[in-house]
Image (cartoon, rainbow, N blue to C red; front, side, top):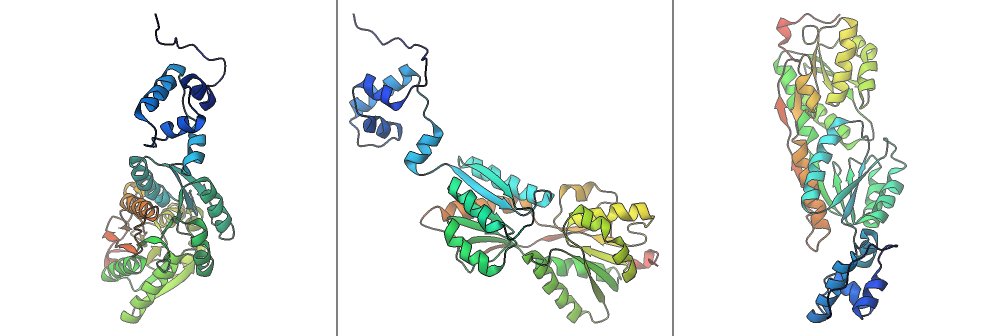
Length: 344
């Protein structure tokens, strides 16, 4: 009596060659069955599937990726993984990608704009598509890179519609934040500027120039700073010399670093000086005092970046830039100037 072949524990990993031999078909036929190619006769395909089950074959994802030309993996290049803002964007991006069956590989450029192009190309060589988060490289270098790493989506840089892009309106956001401080009665405000090569810093500077033109009795003083907790902590001597009664920090991370230093120096926030950040990272709400900031719906932005990148992998890319407008969140770190002590 004929029965089913007994499944035994193999002494080596089962291969497509083994399946082809037992099923009495070619390796090409086995490959087509594994990849669900519909040209194989159904009876033959069923026999191949039975042999696969009996031999306990598990296809190599790497081999399958090479066969199909896809890896179901995308890359993300980030300028600074130490910044919690990017964590939130990545969280939204990763969740959306996972929902579509994709894995995400992340690389940090450590704010080195000269390495970004090589890192992006390396990521693209190992993945199906790449998302560039706030790339720091010059515009001409970015535009030259895009066709070399396509499909690609870009966060916080314009692309001339050569790739999909998702932007935060930093110009509008910084103007709303500055106006908030002006409405509180502050007339000498310091702006702790971020990286000079950052688009988000350029947009903030443009917004503040508009405020200067509209509010001639208000002095907004640029103080070179940076993007990190350490930058905010270290900027205090330069900030103190300005005599500002309020501070616009480049981001929440800088603002929180500054607040830590002010506490050590015995300078009270907001009694002596008001401090505002940007991004609304989780720490901002739970700091003491809680931080006034601009909320940018970062997880939602991450989801949108994925949607744009996914479209780039199809014949219907979304090339019109998508812009998010941040919203003012007033908390305990800013106060009416009339009720504060002036910083000396």
